[in-house]
Image 1: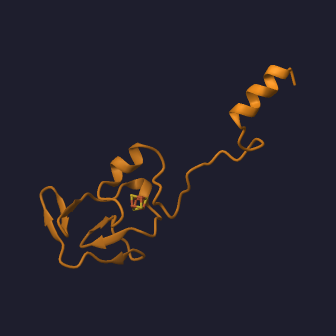
Image 2 (image 1 turned 120 degrees about the vertical axis):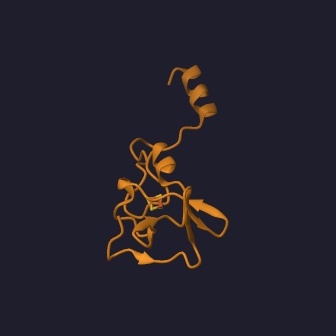
Length: 95
Ligand code: SF4
């Protein structure tokens, strides 16, 4: 999955059967959803993420919060926060 736009890195890393061993951490290769992320770095013929060692697990929980190419959708609709105490007083007064 390595391509010319991804910077090389991981000096001193070693490929092991479990993954890429780098500074005492085992890194798994990036997944399809990481394509376009500026954090990816190449080592030999594979891309890895220096921010998260197991990209597949990161994406399994939703959009990766470290991603530079995708943003977590934040609910921006509505009037903002409602103070629950004030809301209950308002409801009690019938407003
Ligand atoms: S930061 Fe997230 S999206 Fe980017 S390469 Fe790492 S795991 Fe993939």
